[in-house]
Image (cartoon, rainbow, N blue to C red; front, top):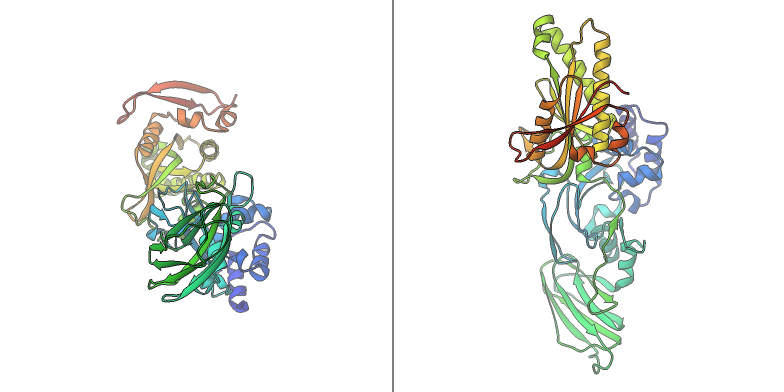
Length: 477
């Protein structure tokens, strides 16, 4: 089911998109040609990069460029942290919402870009058709274990949650509207739970020895989000549930054997994946998906972002001395150097304001590394000039923010942004100012160890108490 002509054309476009490391595109081509349907559905680019020994940043770039070339479609997915249920999937950030309800857990959550929102890639049906392109035609097993449950959830004992969940399911089928299905299970001590995996419709029966004779048939009426079974006492042994779908939509219905009546779902950990936060801090995404906007009116929370603000000191004098055109060209050179440093350290430039830059990073270590490289790059620019025309001031702060769309651009809003900008204002020429939140972040102490550091307390407008600020001088010891 591969369209060879389209595959070849789009692979050529992908190869020409940028300078890739050796054999990177060929590894993706191998997946497209010989990968199973499961392997080509909701691909985790971080896992792909690890398995193929590709740098994570290049792996993410690979799938973004492949998406632009038409090889893959990108999905924003809300994942339940309790059971890895795919609560919702969206092709566009515009449609993403942050308040969600999990039918499997019957729990409600508020998602943030750091948590519960992951981004995956599925092969384009124009290039290669896979059965998951038509979820309504899937078997009940495929629908539950590959379409509804996101791979990557791991039990405390290291067992994949999807495998543990398979061990709980005793019967599973698709029931069309107006149809009835008889589900026979061999009940054991504990409990039996019936579940429509697309709604809140559930039933539960404790299974206890000595409760009397189990009826040969237990009728159950399923109607949209309601599930009404006949009253029954169930003892260990064979039992048949007669489930009638009185609703208007097909139902994927299953019977689960729980080890005890008070069964608690285990706390899952998740394999590394491409979070919404990481994607928004990827320059390739910002460059090629400019039309993506956040549709949620309140924005989407980011629990942990590190922001770098820069500004050129004395740029007005530069324009007066060498003229607008020449100064503009030189300032653009400076912007390119700052962008290059940002991308090399896994960040993205959010915006430029006059001669200033705002960049966002997932970790403070990356942000500080980028800031140091920015300063060095600007120093190199000055070495080619008779005067020190470029004097860079840099501020770095870490905290929570709200991702929003402002002026048709993905941006960040909140106190963390305000503080980062004001910390930059504290910096003298060739100085980097970082806050306590950045200074104490993992790996930062090692990065700044070679540089003279002085600490001071600063009063910032709009901040109720003084903040500790660390100044990194330019000359290394």
